[in-house]
Image (cartoon, rainbow, N blue to C red; front, side, top):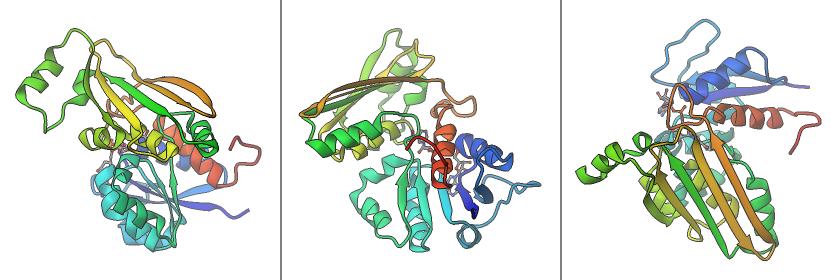
Length: 262
Ligand SMILES: NC(=O)c1ccc[n+]([C@@H]2O[C@H](COP(=O)([O-])OP(=O)(O)OC[C@H]3O[C@@H](n4cnc5c(N)ncnc54)[C@H](O)[C@@H]3O)[C@@H](O)[C@H]2O)c1
């Protein structure tokens, strides 16, 4: 079996865990050949290179660098014929970017990241369109502060003793308002195939030690309810610690993964 050569775009909280696991051989059939991150210095065994070198070396490019990075570099990855596995799914709220990433010749795949159940939602949505889909995300108030907020809004985040709804809107709007924390809402909208149908609710919860996502969907195929509560990454409170392991699962599947769940 030939090895799947892997490049990482981003070596932060997510990318560094993926790099460590690949370097330690935890994903049979996959080999780390490049890391692209302006904030990371080369180190023994860590092949930090420019993007052009990564595209020359790798078949699979895993984006774990953020929505801006996906917007700026994703099109060149697929244009070079490379398979792009994207984690910053919120960037795909931009339909023009999404179409460019689907234009090939390289393939686009999305990583489920911090959320589960997307396979079932996709299957149920294929049977018949949903009537309602809601995703309610509760996080610690400190992780929700954004530059567009008024002084009163950031003050309420700092001082609230009770959970409260910060925003309730269609998933596309919520994804734009909270780019670093709403990739899960985006992934649900992409799985359902309808950004406008999916209502996303962001809750600031001062008692939250976990990032909680409650997903409810109803339609002709049935009624679905998932609740996920993830521990934040020690390196980045906006990211759940599970996310690099979701990416490693995806890499394992793309590398062959005999006998694995698909
Ligand atoms: N799908 C999901 O469930 C999910 C969950 C969490 C995070 N994410 C996405 O993953 C991204 C990364 O998360 P993280 O916690 O590792 O963030 P992080 O801030 O810890 O690391 C991001 C790294 O990317 C690097 N970077 C930025 N722009 C770059 C570029 N153009 N090229 C190469 N590297 C670049 C930064 O220097 C940084 O080291 C988030 O911004 C978010 O969009 C998705």
